[in-house]
Image (cartoon, rainbow, N blue to C red):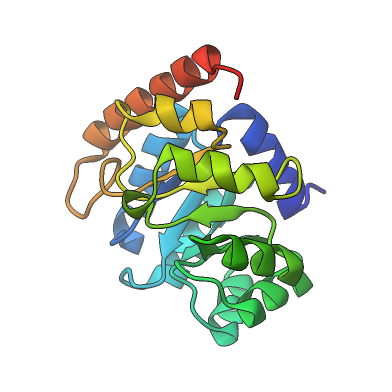
Length: 217
């Protein structure tokens, strides 16, 4: 049986891009899930401020057992438990909350809390975070990624989220970003699955190009 952390490690090696499906409804979960998974995504996040998010998470988890499926915008311990009960294996937050991270770790799920400063980053890792979400990336820069990675434990996954497009991945990747969270540029409510799949393919191609061109720090 593959654990959530094994799924995460495999996805980080294969395609470390998180599909952030904010606003997804259960009725479209299958089609949108098919679109991003067929393009190569193996990390799927349904933010909890979406309509009936736990139902969508349960549907995606059953449909894509090999993918790491979970929730975003997880803000308290009760929400962590609800995500776990729905079958979710991934907990993503916009902020650093030690209790949320600790409960996620206790339940064996992957924890990606949002951080911006070294204090938050080290606190999140001490609480049991699997990796770190640099959020919002619009307030940071590739230089911030490089500076953080210079002091964080080696091999800490640091993933910028916010404003990432196929055209701006390269500088972040060169600075050491381990992957990215992709939101409205990939999916927004009402976007046809065929268009989502085409955009997902562009992100996949951009990642592979950036990974192939990465310069030594």
